[in-house]
Picture 1 (cartoon, rainbow, N blue to C red):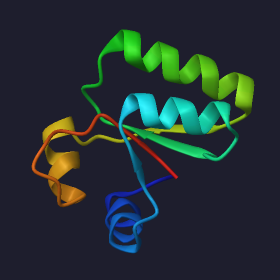
Picture 2 (cartoon, rainbow, N blue to C red; picture 1 turned 30 degrees about the vertical axis):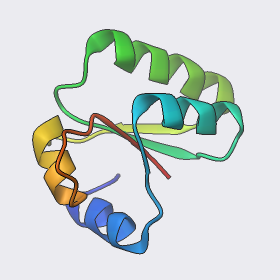
Picture 3 (cartoon, helix red, strand yellow; picture 1 turned 180 degrees about the vertical axis):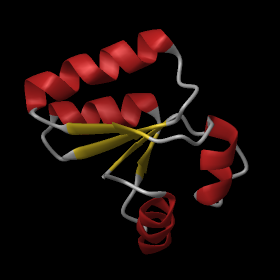
Length: 85
């Protein structure tokens, strides 16, 4: 299970991929093995990520942090709904 501290650590190490399109490309290219979703991600986006994750055997975790706070945790000035690593 991914925690807030794990997200902070991965962000500090520069190991996170940010954004739906970039994460989907990483899943399809088998470069991403874990996906983190914000608590208020759009349902269509969530379904799309989960679909490709099932195909690629990628672990998907939804954390109880809204997208604006997830952006702040990653030290970005914008909201983040999808992270991959």
